[in-house]
Length: 68
Image 1 (cartoon, rainbow, N blue to C red):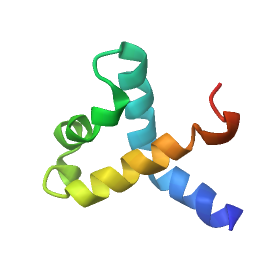
Image 2 (image 1 turned 45 degrees about the horizontal axis):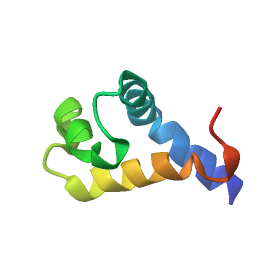
Image 3 (image 1 turned 180 degrees about the vertical axis):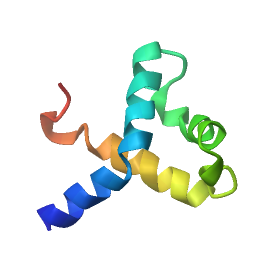
Image 4 (image 1 turned 180 degrees about the horizontal axis):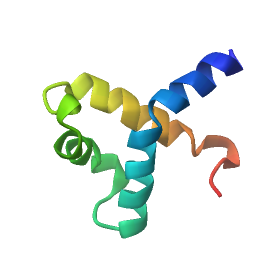
């Protein structure tokens, strides 16, 4: 199970890095970050479901005290 989780994180790393920077900027409440992902990454522009999945995985990375 952990291997799958880490593989997913590797695939999403560019998105996660962007979301980290967006969070640090304070530009938006992170619950509303999906449209930002779609604007920043053309491959997500017409795939809101995939953008939501990425956003959800990023948000879950903060559960259980994972935030640094």
